[in-house]
Length: 177
Image 1 (cartoon, rainbow, N blue to C red):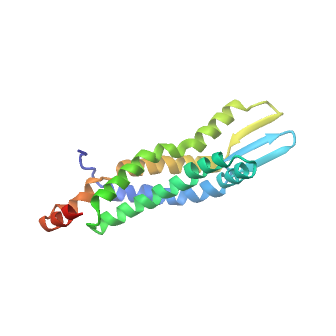
Image 2 (cartoon, one colour):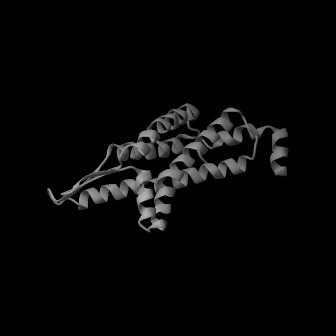
Image 3 (spheres, rainbow, N blue to C red):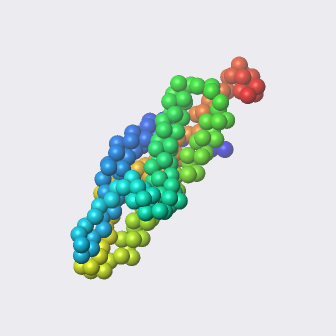
């Protein structure tokens, strides 16, 4: 049983809105800049997905797309849905919404795959003037989005889903589901 989280809705909304603002530069700005003797190349997340797909690594492209684009957007949309349903005092399928919350909370850390890869490549590939890899500004925005959505999921009080169900007439409807 979770204890009550004071100001859960306001705090979660603030974190979700900040995530919506930062997810735009996270997907439009370069996540990684690779430099070599032949020049510098900057890649966005979606550019990396397209590069992997075109180079024959479709499975890696799907993993990158899922972890870096699909999951962060799904988390934001799910948290937004949960917040709106709680504020609307919805009685619609509280068990489903509770499962959705648990899923959002569980998958949060898996969105950090891009950041782990960029950080490891940055640390490993530093050959002076021959080649270098740097994390771009998109990586910072993306990491911030991931951390903010993790905090948003943690600040959301799942007991709010069940508060409206506590009335006796709503309990009868829920038990029929």
